[in-house]
Image 1 (tube, rainbow over the protein chains, first blue to last red):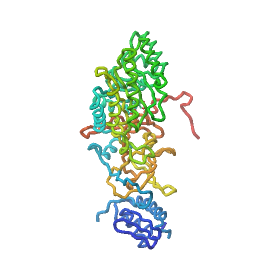
Image 2: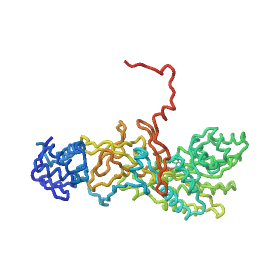
Image 3: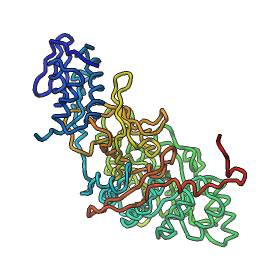
Length: 83
Length: 453
Ligand SMILES: Cc1ncc(COP(=O)(O)O)c(C=O)c1O
């Protein structure tokens, strides 16, 4: 599944996410920030998995599993939509 | 380029829920060691899940409780409640500290004898004691706490046939203002039933009535209920002195002090709300000292404290089996330890902490055990950092009742280890094996073979 980040979402380096259209704010950890930034750069699911496994000490299976879960949350919090 | 440490991506809403006016504390700092022993190494050696007991903490709890009472009252004796945790090593820590034994079945009684407790230092409670149980207790000169008239009459008969005077106490139940009232055990105070039992024992003159006992309930959040109970037992003892010119040697106030656990549905963590040993001691000792005993006739105070002396010394280390997302969006964690070995998760919101270092990013999760049963929920909601498969979590305050009420339903009972005061680990009970269970079964001849197509 590929996601498109909603275009007005604000992300700070410290892991603070704000959605101006709903007024909701969130805290997010470093791997989460990376994923948001990759989505903003319009990366596909496959690109994101490859990018993360280059940078982090985790196998692609783990990253893939966790990415699915994270995508579900982004959809649920209305921060992204299916591309 | 060296790779960065991976942590499962998490995103947590900052405006969910009502703000807590007490502010939130971070209760989930990682704990990697217990008294200097590495939890990870313990699981590597003894498997996961594994119960871990801190000898230092048991002794500390005992000494705190003992100090609270012995600084307020001259004659204090604890008797370790075997059913709370009857692993022999745990019992012996209490016996080394000076505790007698309190048992509620012949199997616990035999454990206490085998541990080296003399019969006269064993209190035998409980509604079911068979004739052979009673004979054994009489022969060893133990303190038999009579629960009902049928037992009283049986003891009267046995004292004749054995030509011995059993040493007995009666268990008294009473209204202490606590609901529900535990009136199914012992003789009732308010109705006069306790007096009937006392008169019967004294007038038949075949048993030595040495004590009065009560156990008013468990996880008692009111210290004042003990003041009421102490006053009622003292009233009976003073009445016996007045009417029968006999001294009662001890008053046994039973167990029931709350441990530092959080009851389900509580607004605040248990550690912040439960009475301290000093609160209970003040209520009991203050009442007894002012009840009207002369100095020489002051009875010994016995306490059968269970959970409050061992709960906090017990931990369960478990591993993450799986991460799940439920259909309503909630995070779920499956552990290799469930309600089969953690019976107390039906009553308590057990504190859980990660074992490995984790970020401050947390997520609320429901925590399930490994059983394919809907009731297997360890926590309905707990805040934890993102954990991966095989990561360890530590479940706190599990030392009371779990290692006696556990069962081998679906999964077998794991190992129990103790960390001694030097930080060395000792195996107290090995993990069960399939052979252990099969060893108790037998197969009828005609069922020994079959062939499947
Ligand atoms: C007679 C008696 N004494 C002592 C105890 C120990 O109680 P607790 O663990 O609540 O201190 C119990 C437990 O129910 C009991 O029934």
